[in-house]
Image (cartoon, rainbow, N blue to C red; front, side):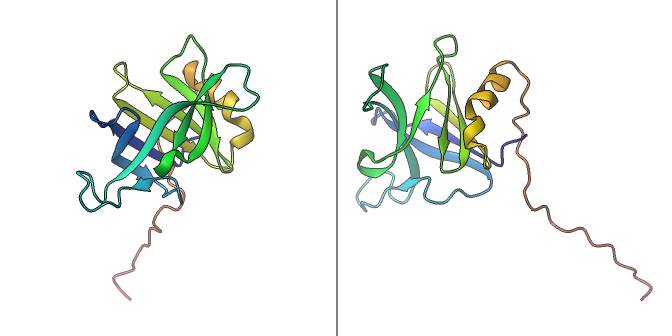
Length: 151
């Protein structure tokens, strides 16, 4: 199993919970990113995601990490293990997602695994055990056609 989309974000220094999109490869994920719409905003037109901790009803852990869009609209609750504080897992729609922060927590990478929502934790375990290939899987590679130049 390989991810079918990868997003790399950089933390915005003046916004403690916002990460601006710097690189994307693989499939486009509908409604996943927010876009700054205020014309006077420094990052007008740029895509971003929010990462924050919030109180989740019925949570035994109190505050939980989540991904959010504009207006702090939560799109995914996340989980992590204390021994891997920079790695998280969760789901978005029917997909499993894995998140990886660099040591300084300024770069965030998000990997999407198509239709693997129910297997997000097992993907996480394989990932931290070094058993998961995280190179992007091309869903619909271009068709290679051979031409007979004698026709």
